[in-house]
Image (cartoon, rainbow, N blue to C red; front, side, top):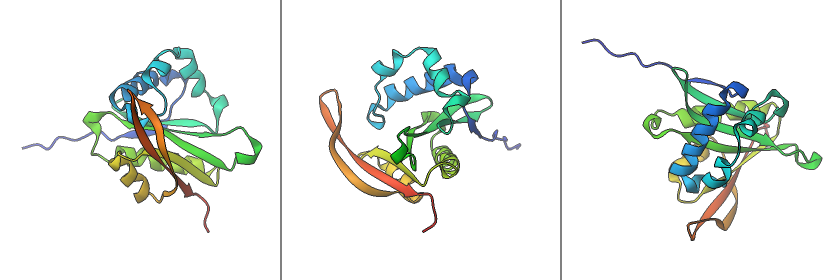
Length: 176
């Protein structure tokens, strides 16, 4: 019996040519996992394709969205941005981590976050993220990668009349 070979996952920064695929997966993420993101499907679906292309243009560096591709298809992503404010440019934010459900359980989210962390380490000293308390899989991933809590926000999100609490986490990217 011949064993099937699985194509390797390829990670790379998204670019303007990926805007349509990123918009598609972003809207899918917001619909399927609304508590995992601060943005809503309604807000993001109102954005035109040009705004997605602009976000992943080279001019936005060090901000980046890393994509996970399987056979040329975008199956996951994770983003990173840095505030423009001078006093907080030493900090960045991890956002938008999502892997399409059929591809979960393969450590793709871990690979995406690790790639974001590698990129972030070239630009900032600390990376922050927020995670809904009920999202145990995401919290475990972040804790396994060294993130630690620094705050708790009750009623951080309100979706369909229900509140969701968030934990604010951070990881130092500089040796102590």
